[in-house]
Length: 37
Image 1 (cartoon, one colour):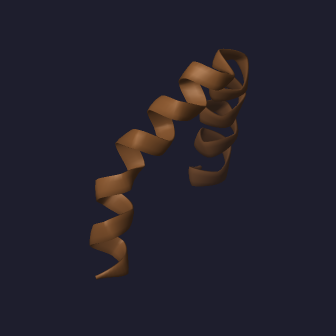
Image 2 (spheres, one colour; image 1 turned 90 degrees about the vertical axis):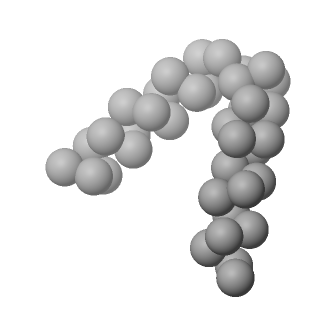
Image 3 (spheres, one colour; image 1 turned 120 degrees about the horizontal axis):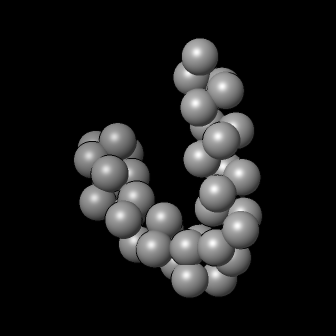
């Protein structure tokens, strides 16, 4: 249930983060890629 809720809210959170700090989004994506690797 929690996972489903997160997936549903993810687009909203991501969009909000992008709107608030575009630069932070770029850094977050890079950090996420590093962590995934």
